Image (tube, rainbow, N blue to C red; front, side, top):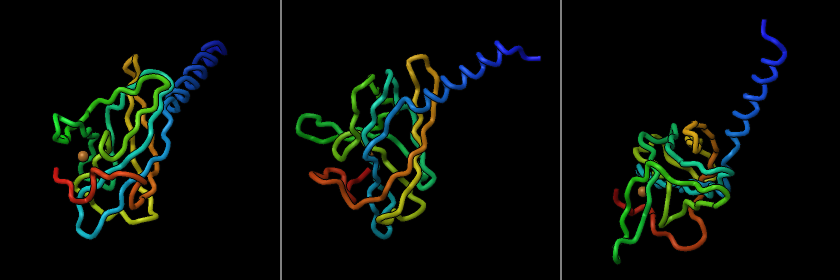
Length: 156
Ligand SMILES: [Cu+2]
């Protein structure tokens, strides 16, 4: 028979787990609309972690392959590479935006239609190595305001 003290400890542990799941705030998330036949799109958002955290995985049922990519200037050439591990320092907002970090949705199984939403699962790892998952619903939009360095013509 479980003692009251053990039960209290167990409940406290659950509370900690629940809090960890909420430890990264996702704001202004959106995915880019696709045109007929387009198999690749991008998703963008702002991530703010309460404690030092890393984004170690992304997945979405709408895409065969989902990866985090980073675009960076290499001299005067813009290069894109996979970023399997993105640092989210405590309290600092990391922006995923066209021309920087972005979630690449490849081998799309369905068109991303304007005003629909798509699910995206983010996998985080905290400083202790504990993983947590967060599922977000991204509205599908035509574009964010401002420059667009990662449009439909982008080759991967
Ligand atoms: Cu990309």
